[in-house]
Length: 113
Length: 114
Image (cartoon, rainbow over all chains, first blue to last red; front, side):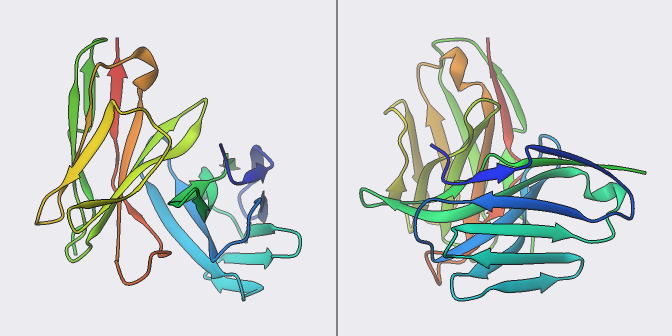
């Protein structure tokens, strides 16, 4: 089962606009990570935010974390056509002694040139 | 450093056959994890190997197995293939310094079962 649910499932914007994706999760976390996946390819790690952090920046990316609401958001500013991809949040979960990186369902972002 | 490599990139098999996929982690990474990605179930964790030992296992049937060699390279085997095993299989490696680190993914192996 998916630990996280992402919202929206799909997002289409124009180049230069900002894109915001949201992620909710169910259990307490050590950290939350965001990954990008270009169509049918491997995932690329974007950013990791620890449970004691509320906001983190990396280039045009801004991630926020609200542990009280068990939610996170990823903001991509000044989007480019090359940002077109699927974006996933992921958290480490512990279930019956099994530790796994559990992914959300993803947001498909389309940036129109 | 070279990234995570996976071979083969594409594979077509028929039901009942078995398949072996290979993954070479980033140099120095001792943890290797495997994931299955399908349109219906999304990304699901299969198992993790660390220093040649299975450290964690997801909720997959015993037909899915793996191993890791002393050079950290890993293989995943699926026996008695079913149509539902058609998926993108992703391998990821990580720095073993923490069990909660980011994962570095390979390009994946696209398996099609006919």
